[in-house]
Image 1 (cartoon, rainbow, N blue to C red):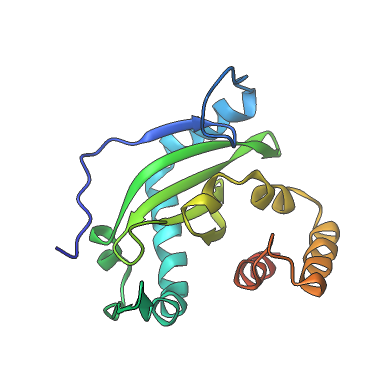
Image 2: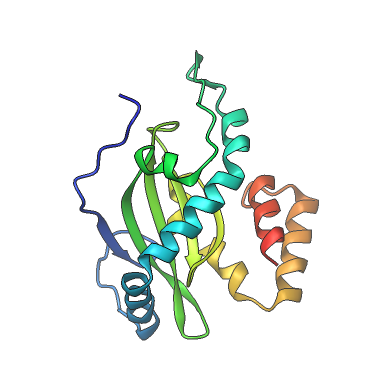
Length: 178
């Protein structure tokens, strides 16, 4: 079955460690959660549009999985993703900008059942995507929270180092948002 089935529930995490052990809930976490609840349709649409823009790259990257062909269908509209991804977890990250925390959204997806796909958003702006772990790594949000010139300098340094910390494709996505 090529579709993701969701029972409508998800996990909510505070911070980046995803354990919720002795976490302090800060005002920016509360503000982020309230924003998510009030604007979930806008956020959903922003994620689906971002995914549609990047889907061809995903198709090209997933030609084979574990040595077996993994042909992914062509997709031309966001509605097609509604059965191909399913929300698995929401992380209210420990990074904030303008009093509102960043939100990580981790999804199951049909093309990578082991790792899933993750997005980080600030308000209804997608700052980037990666595998599921991307969604709860504060370092991804931290760069976006910095002033624009600092962001560009960090991205430049990491590209020069070819750092595994910031894979090239995520740098490309982050640069497009600056």
